[in-house]
Image (cartoon, rainbow, N blue to C red):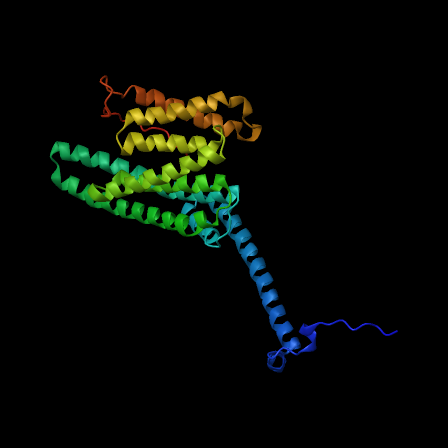
Length: 303
Protein backbone atom coordinates (compact mmCIF):
# COMPACT_ATOMS: atom_id res chain seq x y z
CA UNK A 1 0.00 0.00 0.00
CA UNK A 2 1.50 3.31 -1.06
CA UNK A 3 1.78 6.46 0.97
CA UNK A 4 -1.32 8.57 0.46
CA UNK A 5 -0.73 11.81 -1.41
CA UNK A 6 -1.74 14.94 0.51
CA UNK A 7 -3.43 17.56 -1.53
CA UNK A 8 -1.89 21.03 -1.06
CA UNK A 9 -2.74 23.42 -3.88
CA UNK A 10 -0.35 26.09 -2.53
CA UNK A 11 2.67 23.94 -3.30
CA UNK A 12 1.34 22.31 -6.44
CA UNK A 13 1.31 25.54 -8.39
CA UNK A 14 4.29 27.86 -8.53
CA UNK A 15 3.44 31.45 -7.49
CA UNK A 16 3.69 33.63 -10.58
CA UNK A 17 6.00 36.13 -8.86
CA UNK A 18 8.53 33.51 -7.67
CA UNK A 19 10.72 33.33 -10.81
CA UNK A 20 10.83 37.12 -10.93
CA UNK A 21 11.75 37.28 -7.22
CA UNK A 22 14.50 34.65 -7.53
CA UNK A 23 15.95 36.39 -10.56
CA UNK A 24 16.72 39.49 -8.50
CA UNK A 25 17.30 37.98 -5.03
CA UNK A 26 20.87 37.10 -4.17
CA UNK A 27 20.85 35.49 -0.67
CA UNK A 28 24.57 36.05 -0.10
CA UNK A 29 24.41 39.67 -1.18
CA UNK A 30 21.29 40.44 0.88
CA UNK A 31 22.65 38.70 3.99
CA UNK A 32 25.81 40.78 3.74
CA UNK A 33 23.72 43.94 3.39
CA UNK A 34 21.57 43.21 6.43
CA UNK A 35 24.57 42.12 8.49
CA UNK A 36 26.35 45.36 7.60
CA UNK A 37 23.32 47.36 8.75
CA UNK A 38 23.24 45.35 11.98
CA UNK A 39 26.91 46.09 12.66
CA UNK A 40 26.34 49.78 11.92
CA UNK A 41 23.48 49.83 14.42
CA UNK A 42 25.65 48.21 17.09
CA UNK A 43 28.46 50.68 16.35
CA UNK A 44 26.02 53.61 16.62
CA UNK A 45 24.73 52.37 19.98
CA UNK A 46 28.28 51.89 21.29
CA UNK A 47 29.34 55.29 19.98
CA UNK A 48 26.31 56.93 21.60
CA UNK A 49 27.02 55.31 24.96
CA UNK A 50 30.70 56.27 24.74
CA UNK A 51 29.76 59.87 23.89
CA UNK A 52 27.30 59.92 26.77
CA UNK A 53 29.85 58.57 29.23
CA UNK A 54 32.52 61.04 28.08
CA UNK A 55 30.26 64.10 28.22
CA UNK A 56 28.90 63.22 31.67
CA UNK A 57 32.44 62.83 32.99
CA UNK A 58 33.46 66.18 31.49
CA UNK A 59 30.35 67.81 32.97
CA UNK A 60 31.33 66.56 36.44
CA UNK A 61 34.85 67.83 35.90
CA UNK A 62 33.56 71.24 34.78
CA UNK A 63 31.33 71.40 37.86
CA UNK A 64 34.28 70.73 40.15
CA UNK A 65 36.23 73.46 38.36
CA UNK A 66 33.18 75.79 38.54
CA UNK A 67 33.19 76.20 34.76
CA UNK A 68 29.43 76.10 34.45
CA UNK A 69 29.10 77.28 30.84
CA UNK A 70 31.17 74.28 29.75
CA UNK A 71 29.19 72.03 32.09
CA UNK A 72 26.03 73.16 30.31
CA UNK A 73 27.52 72.45 26.86
CA UNK A 74 28.45 68.92 27.91
CA UNK A 75 24.98 68.16 29.23
CA UNK A 76 23.33 69.73 26.17
CA UNK A 77 25.25 67.20 24.08
CA UNK A 78 23.91 64.39 26.26
CA UNK A 79 20.35 65.73 26.08
CA UNK A 80 20.51 65.90 22.27
CA UNK A 81 21.24 62.16 22.12
CA UNK A 82 17.48 61.79 22.74
CA UNK A 83 17.92 59.34 25.60
CA UNK A 84 16.02 59.05 28.85
CA UNK A 85 18.43 60.79 31.23
CA UNK A 86 19.36 59.22 34.55
CA UNK A 87 18.69 61.06 37.81
CA UNK A 88 22.36 62.03 37.96
CA UNK A 89 22.30 63.37 34.39
CA UNK A 90 19.12 65.37 35.02
CA UNK A 91 20.68 66.94 38.08
CA UNK A 92 23.91 67.78 36.25
CA UNK A 93 21.93 69.53 33.53
CA UNK A 94 19.84 71.41 36.09
CA UNK A 95 22.80 72.45 38.25
CA UNK A 96 24.74 73.68 35.24
CA UNK A 97 21.93 75.88 33.97
CA UNK A 98 21.05 77.08 37.48
CA UNK A 99 24.56 78.38 37.98
CA UNK A 100 24.79 79.94 34.52
CA UNK A 101 21.49 81.77 34.87
CA UNK A 102 21.71 82.33 38.63
CA UNK A 103 24.73 84.61 38.34
CA UNK A 104 22.96 86.74 35.72
CA UNK A 105 19.71 86.90 37.69
CA UNK A 106 21.68 88.19 40.66
CA UNK A 107 23.44 90.76 38.44
CA UNK A 108 20.12 91.91 37.01
CA UNK A 109 18.63 92.46 40.48
CA UNK A 110 21.65 94.47 41.62
CA UNK A 111 21.62 96.64 38.49
CA UNK A 112 17.87 97.23 38.72
CA UNK A 113 18.20 98.30 42.34
CA UNK A 114 21.07 100.71 41.60
CA UNK A 115 19.21 102.07 38.57
CA UNK A 116 16.17 102.88 40.71
CA UNK A 117 18.35 104.65 43.27
CA UNK A 118 20.07 106.74 40.60
CA UNK A 119 16.69 107.69 39.10
CA UNK A 120 15.38 108.71 42.52
CA UNK A 121 18.43 110.96 42.95
CA UNK A 122 17.85 112.51 39.53
CA UNK A 123 21.12 111.16 38.10
CA UNK A 124 19.73 110.57 34.61
CA UNK A 125 23.10 110.03 32.89
CA UNK A 126 24.09 107.31 35.36
CA UNK A 127 20.64 105.75 35.15
CA UNK A 128 20.96 105.58 31.36
CA UNK A 129 24.35 103.89 31.59
CA UNK A 130 22.96 101.31 34.00
CA UNK A 131 19.92 100.73 31.80
CA UNK A 132 22.12 99.90 28.80
CA UNK A 133 24.21 97.54 30.91
CA UNK A 134 21.07 95.92 32.36
CA UNK A 135 19.68 95.33 28.87
CA UNK A 136 22.88 93.48 27.96
CA UNK A 137 22.32 91.15 30.92
CA UNK A 138 18.68 90.71 29.88
CA UNK A 139 19.80 89.58 26.42
CA UNK A 140 22.04 86.97 28.04
CA UNK A 141 19.20 85.82 30.30
CA UNK A 142 16.80 85.52 27.37
CA UNK A 143 19.33 83.49 25.35
CA UNK A 144 19.93 81.04 28.21
CA UNK A 145 16.20 80.58 28.83
CA UNK A 146 15.45 80.09 25.13
CA UNK A 147 18.28 77.57 24.94
CA UNK A 148 17.14 75.29 27.77
CA UNK A 149 13.45 75.60 26.89
CA UNK A 150 14.20 74.32 23.38
CA UNK A 151 16.19 71.41 24.83
CA UNK A 152 13.30 70.53 27.15
CA UNK A 153 10.63 70.66 24.45
CA UNK A 154 12.58 69.02 21.63
CA UNK A 155 14.61 66.37 23.47
CA UNK A 156 13.94 65.89 27.18
CA UNK A 157 10.15 65.67 27.43
CA UNK A 158 9.79 63.49 24.28
CA UNK A 159 12.46 61.08 25.61
CA UNK A 160 11.20 60.83 29.21
CA UNK A 161 9.69 57.49 30.21
CA UNK A 162 8.84 58.00 33.88
CA UNK A 163 6.45 60.17 35.83
CA UNK A 164 9.33 61.51 37.91
CA UNK A 165 11.21 62.70 34.80
CA UNK A 166 8.05 64.24 33.33
CA UNK A 167 7.43 66.25 36.50
CA UNK A 168 11.08 67.30 36.64
CA UNK A 169 11.11 68.65 33.08
CA UNK A 170 7.77 70.45 33.27
CA UNK A 171 8.86 72.03 36.57
CA UNK A 172 12.11 73.11 34.92
CA UNK A 173 10.12 74.54 32.02
CA UNK A 174 7.98 76.53 34.46
CA UNK A 175 11.10 77.82 36.21
CA UNK A 176 12.74 79.18 33.06
CA UNK A 177 9.60 80.85 31.77
CA UNK A 178 9.33 82.40 35.25
CA UNK A 179 12.88 83.74 34.91
CA UNK A 180 11.86 85.35 31.61
CA UNK A 181 8.81 86.91 33.27
CA UNK A 182 11.07 88.44 35.95
CA UNK A 183 12.60 90.95 33.53
CA UNK A 184 10.27 91.04 30.52
CA UNK A 185 7.65 93.79 30.27
CA UNK A 186 4.16 94.29 28.85
CA UNK A 187 2.94 91.53 26.49
CA UNK A 188 6.24 89.62 26.61
CA UNK A 189 5.94 89.35 30.38
CA UNK A 190 2.32 88.23 30.12
CA UNK A 191 3.22 85.56 27.55
CA UNK A 192 6.11 84.23 29.66
CA UNK A 193 3.89 84.15 32.76
CA UNK A 194 1.20 82.21 30.89
CA UNK A 195 3.71 79.65 29.64
CA UNK A 196 5.18 79.31 33.13
CA UNK A 197 1.73 78.74 34.62
CA UNK A 198 0.91 76.06 32.02
CA UNK A 199 4.17 74.23 32.69
CA UNK A 200 3.75 74.34 36.48
CA UNK A 201 0.15 73.11 36.15
CA UNK A 202 1.24 70.24 33.89
CA UNK A 203 3.95 69.31 36.39
CA UNK A 204 1.48 69.50 39.30
CA UNK A 205 -1.03 67.25 37.52
CA UNK A 206 1.65 64.63 36.84
CA UNK A 207 3.09 64.94 40.36
CA UNK A 208 -0.27 64.37 42.07
CA UNK A 209 -0.61 61.10 40.13
CA UNK A 210 2.95 59.77 39.98
CA UNK A 211 4.81 61.11 43.03
CA UNK A 212 4.12 60.87 46.78
CA UNK A 213 3.56 64.11 48.68
CA UNK A 214 6.96 63.71 50.37
CA UNK A 215 8.94 63.31 47.13
CA UNK A 216 11.65 66.01 46.83
CA UNK A 217 10.70 66.86 43.23
CA UNK A 218 7.03 67.28 44.13
CA UNK A 219 7.93 69.45 47.13
CA UNK A 220 10.39 71.48 45.02
CA UNK A 221 7.67 72.00 42.44
CA UNK A 222 5.27 73.31 45.10
CA UNK A 223 7.99 75.63 46.42
CA UNK A 224 8.76 77.16 43.02
CA UNK A 225 5.13 77.25 41.89
CA UNK A 226 4.23 79.18 45.04
CA UNK A 227 7.12 81.61 44.36
CA UNK A 228 5.63 82.11 40.88
CA UNK A 229 2.26 83.05 42.40
CA UNK A 230 3.92 85.42 44.85
CA UNK A 231 6.46 87.18 42.62
CA UNK A 232 5.01 86.97 39.10
CA UNK A 233 1.24 86.95 39.64
CA UNK A 234 1.42 89.16 42.77
CA UNK A 235 -0.84 86.78 44.66
CA UNK A 236 0.45 86.12 48.19
CA UNK A 237 -2.80 84.41 49.21
CA UNK A 238 -2.54 81.78 46.48
CA UNK A 239 1.19 81.42 47.15
CA UNK A 240 0.52 80.77 50.84
CA UNK A 241 -2.30 78.33 50.09
CA UNK A 242 -0.15 76.28 47.72
CA UNK A 243 2.87 76.23 50.03
CA UNK A 244 0.80 75.35 53.11
CA UNK A 245 -1.08 72.58 51.31
CA UNK A 246 2.17 70.98 50.12
CA UNK A 247 3.71 71.30 53.59
CA UNK A 248 0.68 69.83 55.37
CA UNK A 249 0.37 66.92 52.94
CA UNK A 250 4.05 66.08 53.38
CA UNK A 251 3.82 66.29 57.19
CA UNK A 252 0.91 63.84 57.13
CA UNK A 253 3.02 61.31 55.21
CA UNK A 254 6.34 61.99 56.92
CA UNK A 255 6.51 58.50 58.44
CA UNK A 256 6.55 56.99 54.94
CA UNK A 257 9.56 59.05 53.84
CA UNK A 258 12.43 56.93 52.54
CA UNK A 259 15.82 57.29 54.17
CA UNK A 260 17.53 58.28 50.91
CA UNK A 261 15.25 61.28 50.30
CA UNK A 262 14.70 62.30 53.95
CA UNK A 263 17.36 65.03 53.95
CA UNK A 264 16.24 66.62 50.65
CA UNK A 265 12.54 66.47 51.49
CA UNK A 266 12.84 67.94 54.98
CA UNK A 267 15.09 70.73 53.68
CA UNK A 268 12.48 71.76 51.09
CA UNK A 269 9.75 71.54 53.72
CA UNK A 270 11.76 73.96 55.84
CA UNK A 271 12.02 76.34 52.86
CA UNK A 272 8.25 76.12 52.37
CA UNK A 273 7.75 77.03 56.02
CA UNK A 274 10.24 79.90 55.80
CA UNK A 275 8.41 81.33 52.79
CA UNK A 276 5.07 80.97 54.55
CA UNK A 277 6.43 82.95 57.49
CA UNK A 278 7.73 85.65 55.14
CA UNK A 279 4.58 85.83 53.03
CA UNK A 280 2.10 85.73 55.89
CA UNK A 281 3.56 88.98 57.19
CA UNK A 282 2.96 90.48 53.73
CA UNK A 283 -0.73 89.63 53.51
CA UNK A 284 -2.94 92.77 53.58
CA UNK A 285 -5.39 92.94 56.45
CA UNK A 286 -8.39 93.03 54.08
CA UNK A 287 -7.33 89.72 52.52
CA UNK A 288 -6.48 91.23 49.12
CA UNK A 289 -3.68 90.12 46.86
CA UNK A 290 -1.60 93.30 46.78
CA UNK A 291 1.92 92.66 48.01
CA UNK A 292 3.63 94.90 50.52
CA UNK A 293 7.15 96.04 49.75
CA UNK A 294 9.65 93.45 50.92
CA UNK A 295 13.36 93.24 50.16
CA UNK A 296 13.82 89.63 51.29
CA UNK A 297 13.69 87.14 48.42
CA UNK A 298 11.68 83.94 48.93
CA UNK A 299 13.55 80.65 48.84
CA UNK A 300 13.53 78.52 45.68
CA UNK A 301 14.32 74.90 44.92
CA UNK A 302 17.64 74.67 43.09
CA UNK A 303 17.17 71.36 41.27
